[in-house]
Image 1 (cartoon, rainbow, N blue to C red):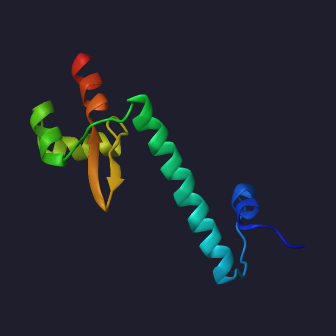
Image 2: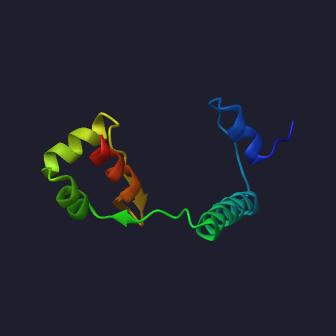
Image 3: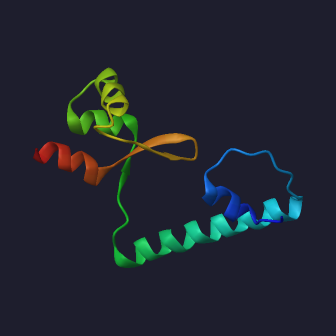
Length: 99
């Protein structure tokens, strides 16, 4: 039975499978296009959030690097990865400051 990579991923079950380079390329291309469309839609709506570095987040929140790390572990403030670097949404930080 032949399934697409998307179908296999949506099943959520563990399995070993062989894929062709062309199939892998297609999945990567589709993922990139989907992400790009999503980001373009966000920017068009003006909902794109400002991202802060770890240092900027620490300064805005007046906390140490250790506190920031503990908050990440507790899922109190979740960073996002951008180019292998952690960034923090300004809107998340402002929400913490409001509380």
